[in-house]
Amino acid sequence: MLAEELLRKYSLSRTVIREEILAIFLDYPHAMSMSELKDEMSCNCDRVTLYRNLKKFTQKGILHEVYLNKQDSKYVLPESILNPQKEYSEHLHFKCLHCEMVKCLTDQKIMKVILPEGFKKVEANFVVYGTCDACGKN
Ligand SMILES: [Zn+2]
Ligand SMILES: [Zn+2]
Image (tube, rainbow, N blue to C red; front, side, top):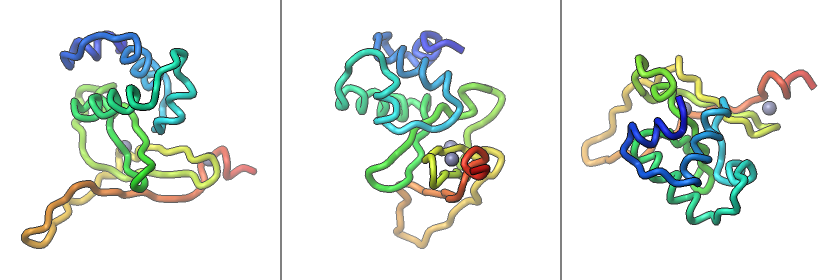
């Protein structure tokens, strides 16, 4: 899948920045924060532009946002984008306490959460903290 095809499929206009963002995500297997993404970008775009595009992609379902805490979200291409047979569903995440790597544990689905009457869900955050394979070896 190419960045350009994704933009077309989701009826988003093609811009250099959008194509580059998606190309970076298509190349990277784990979740990335906005600052990590910014470091990878070749164009010198400001945070507001990046933020707007990440929000847009998230709304369209091209990116999946992993809430870690209020200020700190990471983004990743959902499995359903790379593999259209798979349907998106909420799953567990893993965060390495050493290198900050965040990985989707897509095979481990989250049970349906039932809230008391009148309560409204905004986001759910299911993160397992620990050390990744690379960091665990040291
Ligand atoms: Zn690690
Ligand atoms: Zn995920």
